[in-house]
Image (cartoon, rainbow, N blue to C red; front, side):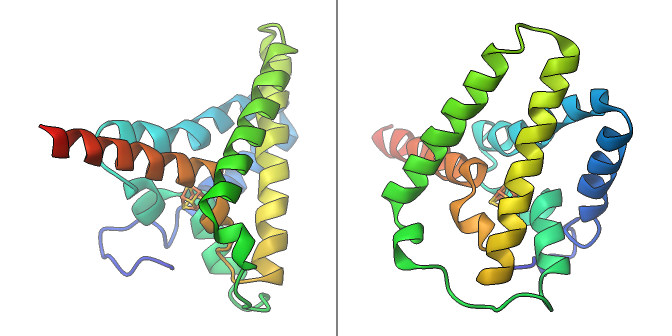
Length: 163
Ligand code: SF4
């Protein structure tokens, strides 16, 4: 799934997520930057650029593709995890967990940063785990952000067909 596109930044963008975790561990306030990782795929999709973030930029996808290739058992994901229902459920669940966590920060910057850091960390660990058990970028099959961009692109497609 690693992009062969020459203008892709996937070869090196993993550095961004490693730097994010290093900085946030050093000072939790950097955790707020997790919001960029979580919103960029959506921003691109809303601007009509489809899944360009997944193909050209995503630091998480870059990390999984680069570092798990040799560790991974390289097995296909179970079929139920590839279904749209499962992806919808995961998107709804993670969205609800994030909203719940954000609500409890009550706008406190330190707590907000911690909430984003924790969310990024948990999803990163899950991504690495399923990347080892299955194919390296299995997370990208179920990733809520990737799935949300697909849904946005689908809706935009329907709308342009109607015109
Ligand atoms: S599916 Fe998620 S993790 Fe994978 S490249 Fe897209 S945004 Fe990144």
